[in-house]
View 1 (cartoon, helix red, strand yellow):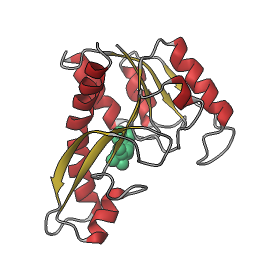
View 2: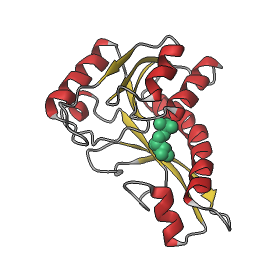
View 3: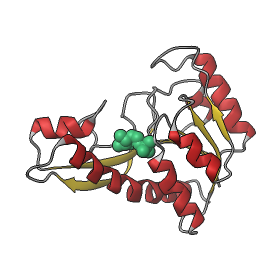
View 4: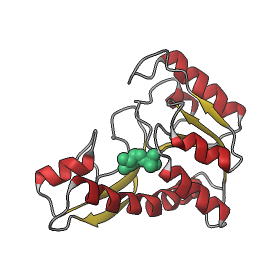
Length: 192
Ligand code: GRF
């Protein structure tokens, strides 16, 4: 199975997936890594691993994912023979035509136990809400923001004295365990 990964930032989740492929625990390969951020470290991580990369041209929009950019992204993923698309720290909303090109085959990871705390800086929302536990969620993307059927979640404690950064670091560690496992589950459902 061939994975396509979209990310906007550091790429630590992509790295966790890549490590799973490299150690044989994830029976797949990463065919293409794309970013809307030409400076995203995710691209450097992929290039270091010899994985093809591409920059998504969002026509100068800061947060919108224009339709033609989505068309170009879908075409690049298809050309690379991608079967499953993984959003990993990708900060733009995916809609048609990407959703139509990969129906029920786009995953996302969110740093909270959805449906709690959708949107940005979910770890900060958890601190501000005063909850004693939060976590991360991998779900299918359905065109909403952090909506769509949940595949796998991992719970993370909020410890006394936590600040947003210490909690986010703990959630990220959980993400790096959860995403490869969720991909394994999604691939199994695809019958591979
Ligand atoms: C992090 O905030 C993570 O919690 C969320 O996306 C952001 C970037 O992660 N899933 P990554 O290091 O680029 O994978």
